[in-house]
Length: 290
Ligand SMILES: [Zn+2]
Image 1 (cartoon, rainbow, N blue to C red):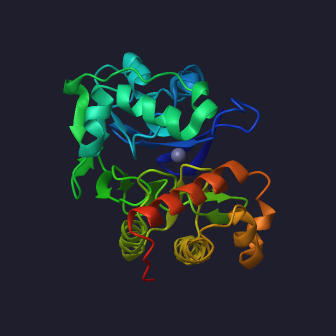
Image 2: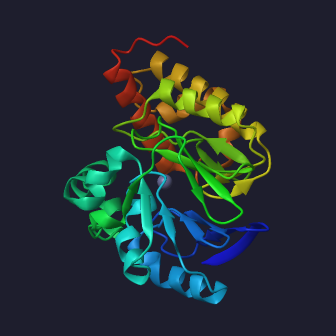
Image 3: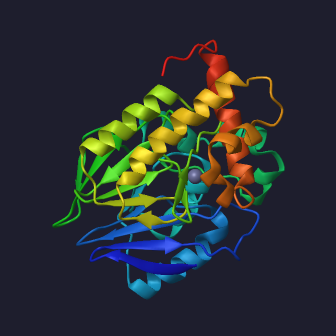
């Protein structure tokens, strides 16, 4: 695990590729002022290294801002709270019940991720007094820095982004950014195309300067948001036109050559995104208007 300075008050805490190789790598972000906010908590396995880094930086955590409750982002929040018991956990209102009682979330993760989920620990439940519902538009004041909550549905029905006026902490709203390429991150069971596009349009309208992706890096190219929208639209079309094809990944590669650069490394995620889009098409009766 390593720390990289994104800008004056913002750090990226990055998992390196050799660590926890059976689990997804993730960037957590720290926004430091009189009060400090960490964006996402990661999962239990990284807790020890995370605490070491926070100690080295001399940082107390006041807010744990959860972009969404998927295990790679939120399952470590309970354990992190043990070290910062006064911290408040900010979460979408649809996520609250799952932080209070993680049983259902755990079972559904085992269903979607299969064996892959076993690398995680079952999340520890979070006391209600530590939870703040992240309502759209609410602003958290860290001192000089203000962080605004944005409801950004699409990847999940309980997704938030956080915005400080220049950096947007995207969670999984705007895809996976790897090697300069941005690809859809649209897993089952809740991916919703229209909601996702709405969220991206809203983010674009805010004119962010730095895009802080959870997977796997930050970027100072806001153009990525446009590329993401176009690619998502293309994948949706290809999948909708080839519903019964067993090798949808190949159909995508036929028309989206750039993805070849990362297909071997990101095959698991790409297949999960395909599953999520299929699930979405099934839900809406396979009728798309894009
Ligand atoms: Zn994720």
